[in-house]
Image 1 (cartoon, protein in one colour):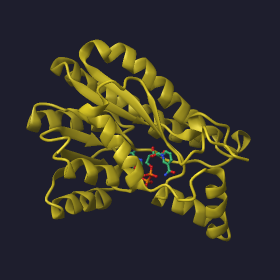
Image 2 (cartoon, helix red, strand yellow; image 1 turned 90 degrees about the vertical axis):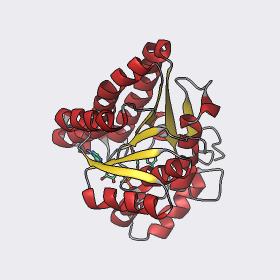
Image 3 (cartoon, protein in one colour; image 1 turned 45 degrees about the vertical axis):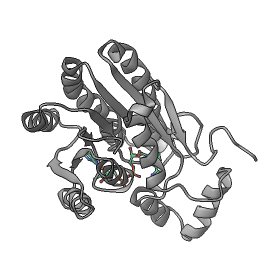
Length: 257
Ligand SMILES: NC(=O)c1ccc[n+]([C@@H]2O[C@H](COP(=O)([O-])OP(=O)(O)OC[C@H]3O[C@@H](n4cnc5c(N)ncnc54)[C@H](O)[C@@H]3O)[C@@H](O)[C@H]2O)c1
């Protein structure tokens, strides 16, 4: 029970890594606030947690909408009087070279992936500062560290999240708040499955290509990232501050080609 009685908010936890982390946190004793813009998927996550004997509730909110985020924060503080953990996980992908990205798409992806992290953190950190305690985990990506083909916009958003994490950590360290970032490689979630189906005639060939980029012969799974998020959220990570944590099967530091 590494998160016993902790209150944890996980954005975008109706699917993929967010859902796996919600299940993991709940299995370690946290009450999980499942957030998503997809109500059906969010409620499914809550149902799965309850079936496993855990505690969770769903709050519908768009992470890019300040009113939604303020209401989510007020709702959680009203009920639980504290927020221990914020996992800024919600994100969307984008594939293409910079010259292929339309301005409205640029704004949309920046908005979900970067403004979303800003908004949730802005409203929730005030309570963590009053509590003099808190843990924020921001979802970056290996794309922040390496030049991946066809990922200009996506990489820019994840680089911004990594820089934001370091700056936030300096400002909030005096309040006993830790801020760290997760940098996954390719993790097999609906996000990636969808991209493979729409971008390749044979997704199996694409999967082999992904494995070739790694040192590991396995595909990354949502649970691999959930375990890393659990570590950062737990007291075991009390000396981790402003750090990028790689969960990538050796993509960033292990190039063997
Ligand atoms: N899957 C990977 O290979 C991979 C690698 C590195 C980083 N990431 C990052 O991990 C995070 C989760 O990715 P995933 O693969 O689990 O994706 P996913 O698509 O399976 O899940 C993302 C969830 O976020 C929700 N969401 C989207 N926009 C939202 C908004 N405005 N407000 C609230 N919720 C919103 C979606 O409805 C969805 O349920 C993303 O930030 C992604 O960039 C993923």
